[in-house]
Image (cartoon, rainbow, N blue to C red; front, side, top):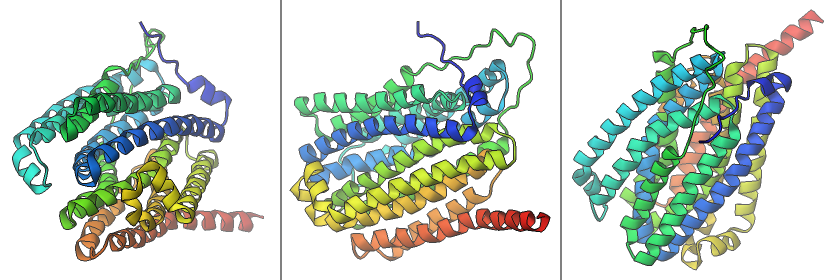
Length: 427
């Protein structure tokens, strides 16, 4: 039997929130390097083995799973926030168990809907078979409760266990995909690898709470409806912004162009995934801190780290895109070389907005989630109107993400100016 996962609260009391965020971010980032390498291996093998057209089919299914993950992320954020906020192990366990039951109910319902609607969805996305959506339904059914499990670890600040689970998911997908290549199952096998990885990540993820010490205190801060709605609104907007461009490109362009764009988006997702690991470390620590200057200092580290990652990513892809693409995807993808740096810039702008939005969410009920949802709609509209070329699709995203970052950062700038004014007046 696996030993109980140790609670990180005592450690958090010893070290400052800022240093805890830094330590957690480093752990999550190191894990993300491994996950990114394994996922890249999977995608490179699929791209080379299937070719641009069939790789586009697999990317469409992966994108559908990412869209469904709006609820997964919602459950994870709510679980992490309230596990962090509750003081006793019993209360943490109570919130976790309640959310896990709801997640399983939602996952099963969502999966059934996908199975029933597989034929029209397959026609809409130009998929070769409705069986791909049955496999997607299995992945979705496990994905929602997996979000609760990961939220439990995140709320406990068990970043090593959380990072290890991401590595496990990527490893299962890679190993199953390699086996499937030798069995010549093609696109169906590649999607089966995705479904197997999600199910495996859920089944091999223990989350334990030491409730023996909490025999008398049964007080609990339950997950509220408003917190859940805030998380859902944020997650829906996040998932749309991160994935709708791939689906729209698949609808507007031919299969080869859609496959090229999927490769470009894959690199952008690497940057966003790394940024999200930093956010994952910040979120429970910020949620567990009381309002004040000490809590605000938690924001500085993730903003600097995401800014640095974005700068490095864009610089490398701008200076030597063909070198990177040649190693990773092969010469068939050279014609999209000029798009990789642009897409990384759009992703970096959005990642900075996400740091600010999730910080606000960890402290209070924030309205930035609704703002993000509006911009996700504007992205659909913008790409729908301007899609003559793949470059034009990315430029639309850069413009929208720049405006959104400005609007999200504006309240922080105003509050900073106000604090400076009060300090100067007091002096």
